[in-house]
Length: 175
Image (cartoon, rainbow, N blue to C red; front, side):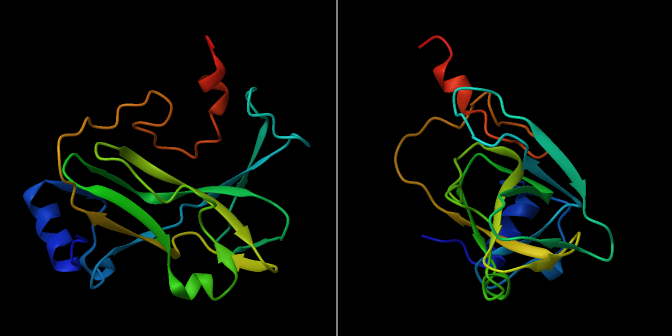
């Protein structure tokens, strides 16, 4: 089952879900809006080799906005830090953002019970679009989980407070 917005708020108040900072105005009927932080990362390598650490470049999103270009993968992050040891967090773009042809995650919208951190967003656009810091760019929602489980504890992404480029090269270490 998916938690209602009112239930998300109750679970935040009870400490079973953490969304920091939490603002009641961002609660939806069955999700919570998350905002885009003020910085983006792009890769500098021509070929993205998953066995190697990749070069990146940071760009600040000024208050007047930044125009994103098609054909470029931008990594951003949520302003909010989230965590829960009780529910499965999921991330989706907001419909208003999608209607601009802006994708906020390529494949990584599925979270794990126990994940704690800011969400890295894999942003692409269909045509040039201007984005702004603190825009409500995506929404998080929560599923209940049934059965025994082990909490997420990956050393790659757990506890992040910054934009996380791919660390896939770590999967090849020692192999």
